[in-house]
Length: 163
Image 1 (cartoon, rainbow, N blue to C red):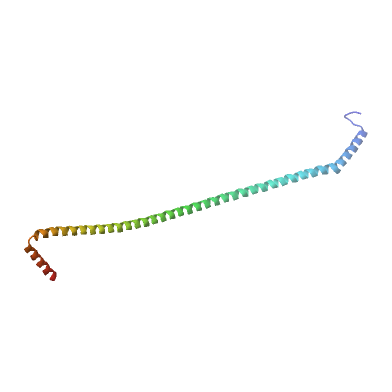
Image 2: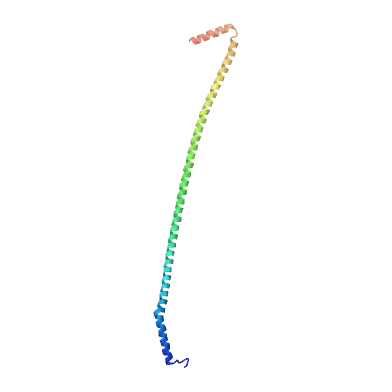
């Protein structure tokens, strides 16, 4: 028996054993191997599909996020605009109220000044009248020191009153 040229019996036994091993592998081994390869391929395909779905969801979430950010910016701009309008309205109302208060204070001050002026004028007139009476009294005392001039003055007053 030589290693390079095998005997006819060896070839038959090797073929028979190969056929039995091939039959056993074809009956139970290859179906298990192809089934596990198919299952693995299905798992890989489902994983790829899940990854694509996750990627799509991430894109959708990114789009929703950008929409929400844009919406938040618009809302912020609207709130700031309303706040500015409210501020302007409050400032305008405060100005009008301050102007009204200033007008009331000025009117009150004018009336008070007019009343004080009128009171001062009355006091001055009273003082002038008292001063005039005092001066007239002194003049009359000087002019009417003698009884003849007194009688003449009384007659003249009676004539003026009777007219």
